[in-house]
Image 1 (tube, rainbow, N blue to C red):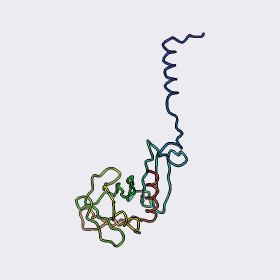
Image 2: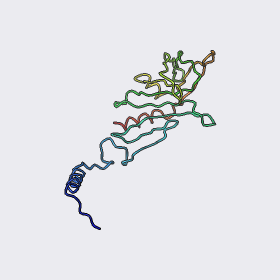
Image 3: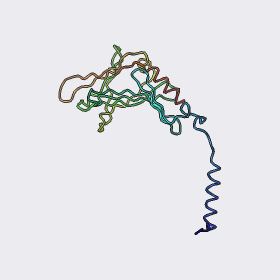
Image 4: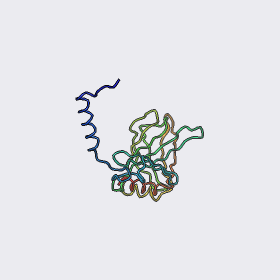
Length: 182
């Protein structure tokens, strides 16, 4: 049994086809701000750092380092995003539970003087979060440094906990993120 399409359904269908044909067609590889080769995601390794991108309205890229214990439990994670001008970075540091939150965490590149303690913003199931911003001299120190030492105090004791973050590959990863997000 063959049914005839009603006049209103034909009209709606014609409008939908016309609207679809009117949409601009830009190949992903040609879109401004696209990842290389039109990729929808990208992951590259630079020393101890990983550049991770996903394609949205433009590339959304970050440089990441995560450290895990042998059993797979995460000890710390740091994630940074380059500013559009490549002259600063913002991000987060995720540290384990059991730290004295009021004491904050100090950051020190190699043997340079330690910065003033940075405050924790909150704790989530993944760990305790410290917002980060690096600009000017602090960003230059990261680029030239070997280790970023994070120091915090254990809760209910005077024990100082130092968690080193390797800066091997940081400069290349940072430059790559800046280039991909311009």
